[in-house]
Length: 261
Image 1 (cartoon, rainbow, N blue to C red):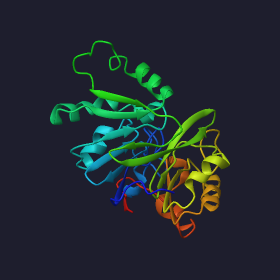
Image 2: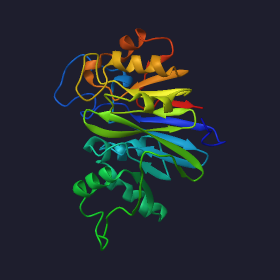
Image 3: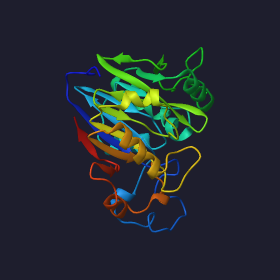
Image 4: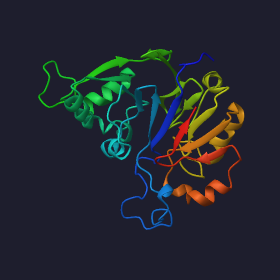
């Protein structure tokens, strides 16, 4: 695997929850009532810092708060995995970077995701720019490597039930969310990862997300040095107790967790 960059990478988990977030509105289950901050999960997103550049993967409805919480003052690009609302709904809040920094923000997404953005935000992709709309520069990506500011991103196509979704590999870091199936060919792209992040919605089987056992099986096949589970629902259980039962090199991710490679 070609190194993506000579610079060290810093990874920040902006959110690690499923589409409802945790706690879930109106739910008083043990997880939603937990006082452990690791059980409080915003919608799933991650930020990769390479040198002076911040790259955000997915921009859900909690994007504004995630940027404020992590004191992010600039982003170089946003990459999208797919077009579901919990992964694109925060795009309007990119305006703040436009205003404060007087810059256009680069967006990397498949044609299907851009179609979803156009339906969700019809005032963005207009022939004549709507006043106050986010200033974005769209780059269409396919299942082939591309570079941003000299950093190589390798898309990994997975299936979210019947929907194709992109994960990404950057150097020794691989990130997969909203997957229920990964072909052997795409799994090869994950081999020799130092860190693998992969989704597991709950312990029981689900039609469009890996269960914990299914995620652990992928981890065993790919054999990264370390693996982190993300996109968790309240059905997964309390962070501390679930974590104790995981293999030594696997742990649940949590909001605000920072890693370095």
